[in-house]
Image (tube, rainbow, N blue to C red):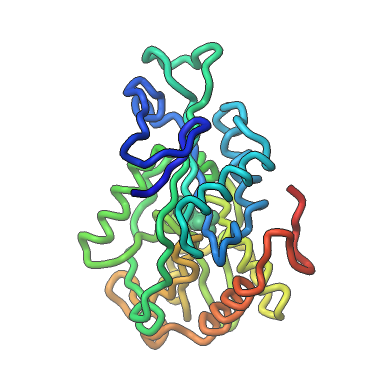
Amino acid sequence: MAIVYLNGDFLPADQAMISPLDRGFIFGDGVYEVIPVYNGHLFRIHEHLRRLDDSLAGVRIPPPYDHQRWRAMLHELVKRNQGQNQSLYIQITRGVAQRDHAFPESINPTVFAMSSELKPLPQTIREAGISAITTEDIRWQCCHLKTIALLPNILLRQQALDQGAAEAILLRNGEATEGAASNLFIVREGKLITPPKGPRLLPGITRDLIVELGNRHGLPVLEAPITAAELAHADEIWLTSSTKEIMPVTQLDGQMVGNGRPGPLWQQMIRLYQDYKAHYTEDGQPGTATAG
Ligand code: PLP
């Protein structure tokens, strides 16, 4: 039985109890983070905790812990669940109160964390890539906050699955912004392009690392809008996230992307990414921001 963390205690998942009056359950009033663990190291932990702070501030939930306490708790969770590679999920809700839209006075946030096995990207995806569809973004206007209310993302992902694709790439005002649970990159005439950060997309930790690696290794990345037409004619399309890393999209809306195989820039970037992972320690690397 997996061990989870709930409000100060580590316990088997089936013994963790949350009130039905928790505002996470009633309203979807909370935020979350997903942090990969490689060889026991919390990958890009400083960046994940900074984004968690931003999400909490964005929905006005007081931060329950400082970074040192988060890290200590997460390391303990990793230890109790064993396994070198794990995916950690943290969720914080505004807490338990009688149902009322207004923020309740003096309640404690609910803090929950769990771990699951982090599996490497299947070989079939590395060799053949994935299919994606494009569809209109039906989400709200604060997509930069990592909130638990994911119903639109769920519907969008399911729409892709129902059409035999793995992910939905979202369009707003004729521009492609990100996937239902991933960030977007395209390659066009040898240039790597990703949409600029802003309220229309999540500031992905993987996205930022790719920008950083690209700049460091002479593959500069342009942060610029991507129109639906540019997406349709891209030489390569990638979708990125902490658990799936960098997925090459080889079919878009039933049409081949490039020559229908993962492209050369993807091959280069996935090598850089795996190399970065292999050398990563939580205390940082040369050229890596480590401020907590
Ligand atoms: N965009 C959305 C909507 C997501 O849900 C996710 C991750 O789940 C991402 C982008 C990728 O973010 P990260 O690289 O931090 O996992």
